[in-house]
Length: 396
Ligand SMILES: [Fe+2]
Ligand SMILES: [Fe+2]
Image 1 (cartoon, protein in one colour):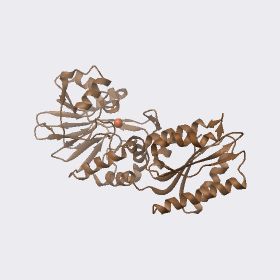
Image 2 (tube, rainbow, N blue to C red; image 1 turned 60 degrees about the vertical axis):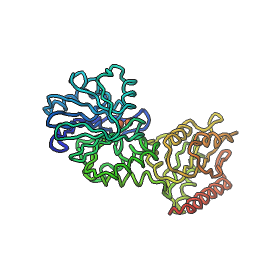
Image 3 (cartoon, rainbow, N blue to C red; image 1 turned 135 degrees about the vertical axis):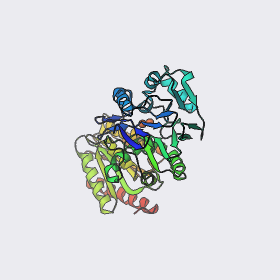
Image 4 (cartoon, rainbow, N blue to C red; image 1 turned 120 degrees about the horizontal axis):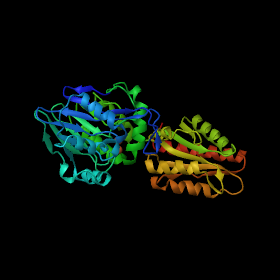
């Protein structure tokens, strides 16, 4: 993507991290990611919007030099997280006249993370404040909680290009700056939304309203592709961030000797026969990014766990903790599984780990040893209960 123009005088200077396989040491990124940074040239002054992960400093500086820019006056920091701020100290050192421009909260966080940044090199701006580059104006729009409390947007007023940092990002390493076909970025963008934005869904909706009320002509996020048609990312986010879930069930499961796996198959089949979409994930081999993507949509979470060492299986506990942290819009939960000689604590443990979601609980099903006819009848009852609760929400 290096050396490419967004428009005359606005350069892409970011880097692609093709083999990044985890983000925040949390969710897999099988298609890598990018750290997008942009150089905006004015008649008198130049501004760099965000930087990149420090690991890619050399490539980033190479891309910056490739634009032919001789001086940088402002380094705009839209977000203090290191994947965008990490090369700030290097740019400050390389361009001794440059100033770092950001809001007060971001400034404090940057100095916590990188104490080497001199306080007198920082210009603090407020909501809707502008800086003049000579023929070009940058406006700063506070946009907290997309992804951290200090996040903000930068608007290039004359061209109406909005730099949204993490909002509308995708974990997709690509050599294209712009992708207009959603098939090329839908899954990496949804994966990104699920992991980074979904926990702050209420705030994301407010920021979408802000963007929707502007006359933006282009959206340039700081991960993955940029968008010449702002309606495209807004439409996808509207669906994902809406309060209404789909008529769908997520079944993350783990089975020690196969009994819980048979329960998964039975429940999945029973739900499918009722016209409900089901996403079963064997946690032993599951891509947790996919699990997170499904969490964006489902109305019910049915967690299957065998009992091991008198407790829920650790993989099931991890899935429950992750689900609780990602704050999906799901409304209902249940737990099911097999135990050897005592397993009654498992549903209580799992539901306890999901307690932050305030889900309506459908009575759990536990079986001692192999599932029996009674077990399957109880699972049919769970499927019926899920069907009726989804119907009560009008989900089809
Ligand atoms: Fe971030
Ligand atoms: Fe980021």
